Image (cartoon, rainbow, N blue to C red; front, side, top):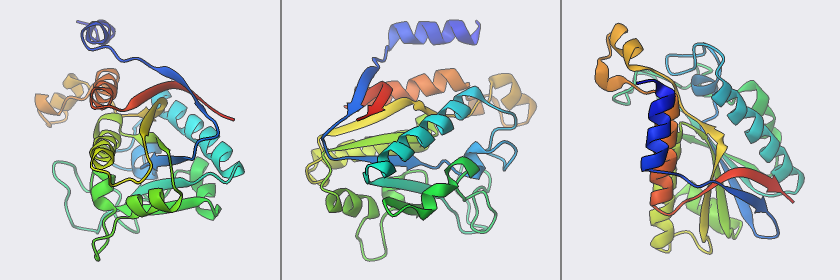
Length: 242
């Protein structure tokens, strides 16, 4: 069966509903997940795209648009940077985004974020950014950021939809339900500014990874969105900042 047919069948069986979302007068913070060279710059590492990818390109363009709108209005932005100690593995993935490699740096289109007063950069050494944000003293950089800005809502974008983005969002939802996030009511995921990687089954097998490493982009992107929505996240198809 063609991938297009599979995506269509999956959409019928487990549909996702995308809303038009307007960032208005509420106190909204933007979280950018791992838009670093090692995941989003062509040829930058073993987990980076090996050729230009329309889904990744759209993610970058929409993230840049939103981040510029947020910083222009002095709205808070938090950007995760996947950053690993050299030689310390993160199974099941090969070494990636090791400190000092350049893979852990923001992609060129987003490097300007590092110079913005409204932006908080948070290095993380694991898939789940919420877990990676814990400090040695037990405090958490994400929780502190949310409470410091007294947020009503968090808008999440980034890569990979079904891995780092999903893990973060599901944990944020649980933390919200456990009254850990102050005033936050809504966790919104902008589907158009999320992306994941593409590894069809034939490619996975030919590269010696085995069939279970298959990761068709359109299917896994949809699955990530579905699971986040099924746990209580709101999904946006368009986002405007007023």
